[in-house]
Image 1 (cartoon, helix red, strand yellow):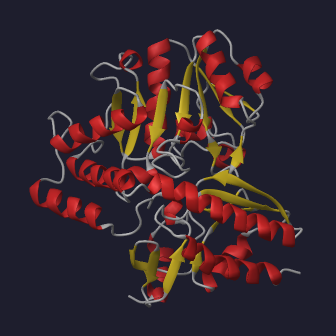
Image 2 (image 1 turned 180 degrees about the vertical axis):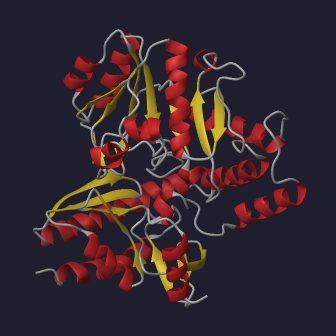
Length: 391
């Protein structure tokens, strides 16, 4: 098939749930992807912060091949070695004891909410406006953006929302029926929003004071993306539950819900499950991806190159008055504009660079964690050129 044939087939047979860019990606390596016509693109999006180790990482590919030749799937009724190994690695880098494996970030958050309610015996979850936690009925209700959930009423009860970073509002929302607070360190889909200094420490302390569980959604910020293995490690806090997905599997679908020994006792056999969660193929891929992030010090590279990239964006901000803010950590950075950003994404694609726009007016940059300063130096002049053509 050529590009037009692929797009035509999508239009005929695949539900129209995404506004897609008019290219058909075929293969990739590292920080580069190639469309079916052979055009090369510098990838500053990484499949929505998924390909943290880049495309077709040798260790991940070999792990998938080796495991596929042995066993692709087995039921959770049985034990498998890759899941056991991965659970130990996750415990080591997170400081939490137990993990439930699933297939996506939405499922990881769904498990977190169910666990919090079962463990505490309470019903309410406090989340924040502009958050994003998934697209299941439960997690889309937890999401603090009406556009994603209002079309699907009636919604499940038991959710409250407050402004992100507003500790007074959070205290006002927490009461005797609150099971947990569910929150992101950086609101990825909400526009790369960040909380004020000291917020998470105060939130953690207040949750402990009120015997409320703190759930940190690290689906987008986890696995080295922000310059640390977990973004929550920037703060002096101890979450009760952490959700992971995206970068965990090196591109293979996998989700994980992490918690302590104590809180994990909320689940007993039959309370929750997943047919494909923790299967040997996805866990083998995740083991290789985690190893690559740690052994290649990709968190450290994300911190160093991220600071370099952010400084370049700040230089552009001083040049163009339509840039209102630059924010983020590591290699999860947003440029906020005073206008829609969709056309800029299109223009960058035409210049063979893939970026994204979220919240309508925030350009999101979430490249593979292995990108270099020279990759940044290739991208910035192209972005500058696009900006210079804005009237």
